[in-house]
Length: 481
Image (cartoon, rainbow, N blue to C red; front, side, top):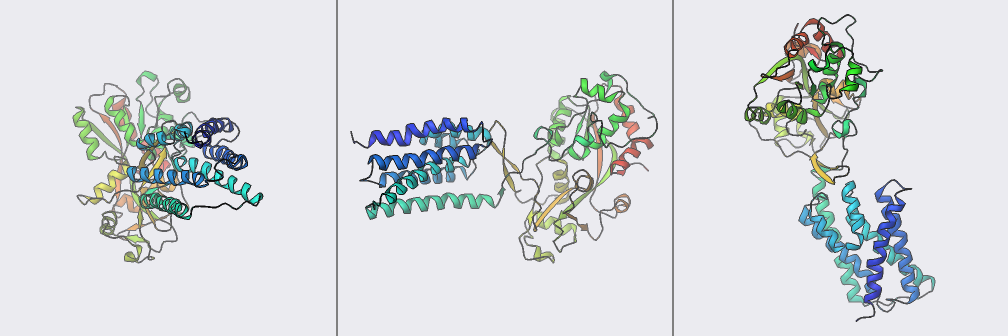
């Protein structure tokens, strides 16, 4: 057996495996998986490299120290090509087999959604070995002799492989952005909903200032509410006024006023877990889901809202036509210069399929196909990485859309500018009189066969002067004058 086999297994097998477990210990003090990994592998690699040369191991064949760098680079590049750069792909489990000494780190990285460690982990260890080895040589004034052809081959392979992987990553970055993720509502919400929570004693829900004309006193008769993010303040305000002792009731029965966002809330309506869903008009797919489930939807309009498009305030464009919106989101118009703005590519954000705002965009587009939406890789907590439609980023060349109340009230952003459409600003007056072209109803949606007796009178109350008063106080436009 070659005398270098056993040392190779020790330095590139046993020791990195031990360092992998050391990473978990460091995590107790450094609450960051990347920092803990790089710290343990870099320090360990440096001392290994220094020790290798001090013992004289590989001193006559330094290429062995450099070869793992090329191996890692080629392996990473190959799997980047196979997966298209998506670190959530199952193929990376196979990658871990080829770097089995670092498998504990890879397993932890996949759970934490940190795919970057597939490259940074082994590379940091191997580069540190090279650094430690060369520091020893230069400190002892020993000048290494290399077989030039082998050295150039390894460096060429290393550079080409890293370049290939980087090219895949660059191409992916054009349509997939770094994750922002959702911080609130158990990962369902991009906005802190606490100010609208009925159990929050300091909530900012509007009050009627008088006794409501309709009350529900028994928790068993209270309809279970859920809906879209932008509608949460509405149904929270309704429950706050109509449900008797609401704070205590929700404390005992938290499912009565819930938020799981548009997509999941609609599913829960069809399964009977929710009695009233609040949001915009359901998408074609959601309507088909209702038919497939044998459910007849009852859509009660309770408010009006503007569907708005917005840009960064630095953008010179102040107004778009309906046709221009369609041409942007079909990919026909790609640069702001075509619309009187700067010569910059339009970064047009979308929303997830079947969300209320995405459904309205599809309605505007009619039968015109949409461009592929920008995506983002999102860590799933203890479940790896998923790819989803990217949340809006306020770049100078961005274009986004939402509901007026959400963009200017719930998630007010002073650094965006609402665009006029066909010359009409999305003002309450223009929404009410129909001058602004993109208006939408806010619905309370139920299924026809729901037996709860309180549902019908509750829906009637929502459209009463008191219900409409709350709608207006929140920031929507009344559905009933």
